[in-house]
Length: 171
Image 1 (tube, one colour):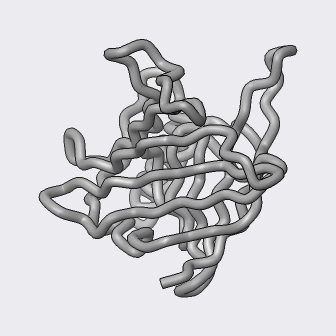
Image 2 (spheres, rainbow, N blue to C red):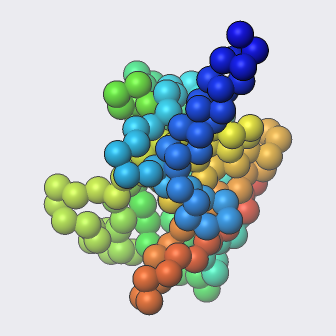
């Protein structure tokens, strides 16, 4: 019986590891054909509030609403040399028993980057300790007032570079 139990644990662990592929030091993505782990908006409701810090060579500001009906709405802006560089409109939502972070980018003049009906989607991969890991993006809660966001950015040569956003909650 103990041998069967050990075998079940090994197989379960192998399936979990196979469900995600390492992108960068702190980001992963879903393996081909794998589905997201189960999650609800309550699992990331701690993200609600106003956050500011550094990232992408400037000041990063991110504000998230409280969860309502399975959705959190957020905004992001990057400021460099006291000028807005771009904005994002974000939706964290429950989908098919898991989470998806969906966003659209906008120029300082509010001209959308993505096509009218397109969004950038980050599917939930899993939760590891205080890290909520999405494909290419990780939110790491550090106490009640600190947050690190790790983002895998594809470079022109096709490689991935990890960008770190070190954020502090102001409310």
